[in-house]
Image 1 (cartoon, rainbow, N blue to C red):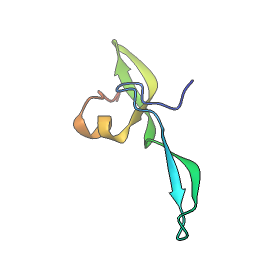
Image 2: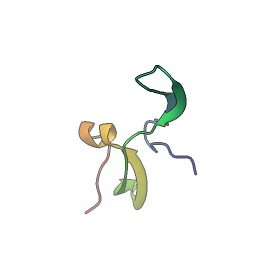
Image 3: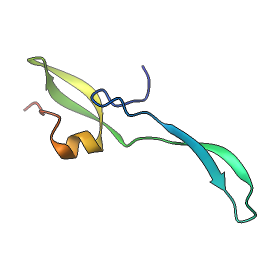
Image 4: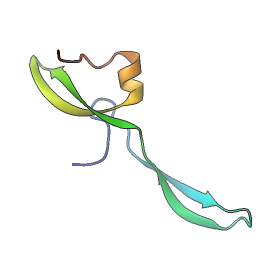
Length: 63
């Protein structure tokens, strides 16, 4: 299972750590994923969603 949002498919992006001396080392920028209990196709499931999807209301939370 990849570390990505189940709704929008947002994944990690790669980039560099840049030091004061302008040395560059590889790093990743990970999305802020939360494991929530949501209603998916009429059933309650645990899904991984990014906070952007939670904020915009794309997730119907289970009670």
